[in-house]
Figure (cartoon, rainbow over the protein chains, first blue to last red):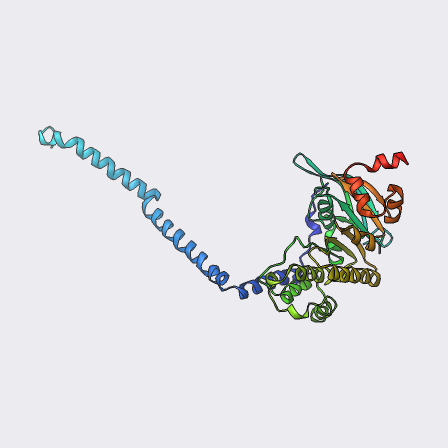
Length: 90
Length: 253
């Protein structure tokens, strides 16, 4: 059995209108659905917004590079400190 | 274009396999236009799967289904507006009132003068008193009547019914059967009725298809089935087929 071809599918505005009407009736009949319609997208916005903000601050390419160089400089300083104390290097 | 001389429903070598289970195993039948046929069978016989494939909701593994000449599910958009389906096991949105549900389905089928059609159905099926009540708060019998109203909203030419009088008291069930008979006569609709109520099938159907484990075990008029099996009621015939006594009895005769 072949799968239904795309050309067989027709766009029917009355069917779309019926489904919209169904959801309008559902939302009108339940204020919890209406609240959820606003609440969950708001939660998503906040969670992903803050997460992206955090990632951008801490894990960006340049942030990683800067941290790497800072760490290498710290290691270099730690290694060279005894030599500097001993006067081997200026 | 739809062919006017083809049968209303033509099923040919239809097979549906779910993983390792053959729910429907190569069945074939054709229903004449304007006829009313009973589809009988125990639980798991394949009745609901067959109806689902006729409506185009389930894709057959192999075989073909044609409704009013249109191949299902490929050409379903040519005939879906001419068909409808009713089952008490398929719920409508509970929060919507009866009127809202009927409006949504009426719009899906692009019914003209929808308000008038809903009012007429409410009169015919005695829905007026709970038309503005949420569907979830209705009794089982009221829900069945609402489901029937939904099935008749587009005055279908092909009507598929799964247990149309389930949960109804005998008086209301009898009234619904009368209504179905009247609708079929006036509209000239083709009706395929899956039921466990043998009295209902005997009263309504001019042809009975008995299924068992995905096969068609028998296919005849109720009267001829009673004669062939030597039984008084269709229920006894059904039990003979279900328990595998049909062939033995026929052979003995």
